[in-house]
Image 1: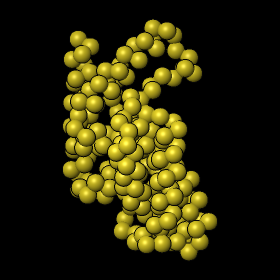
Image 2 (image 1 turned 90 degrees about the horizontal axis):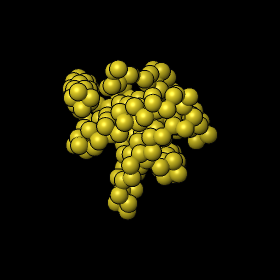
Image 3 (image 1 turned 180 degrees about the horizontal axis):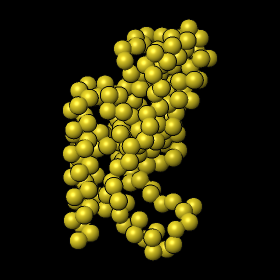
Length: 187
């Protein structure tokens, strides 16, 4: 079973994005299109950071409010998502200044799996969470931005101030390392 499955990026094209940003800068009501496009990835990313639905919702709201307030001063240089995720990362950091992180609730009561499959899946999730928690904060952030937020490598690179190829290589090395560690634990 592969450790990682890529999800499509929420961006359609850089030109499309630039037009949406320009429209939102002229008329704040147009920001709803950007909000709709980025709500889910921002929420998923923040949930992966805080592990609580109410806190992730609150931080998502704070992120979009801060973005809307700063939008008139935003200068589009490639990826709006990088700017937006930088705001989200800062909101998560501010959150942790007041409260330590909580473990994620990985239970999925609506799954229609048999009990044995649920136990095996739960065990694998627990092992993976343990392995990920042993990574550096920078490595964990890369995994969150790719897997929880579903950002492209170019968007992650822009957000972290790194080259796209460097981000891609680092991510795949991490994924391979985690896969090997899971296989070792199963043997």
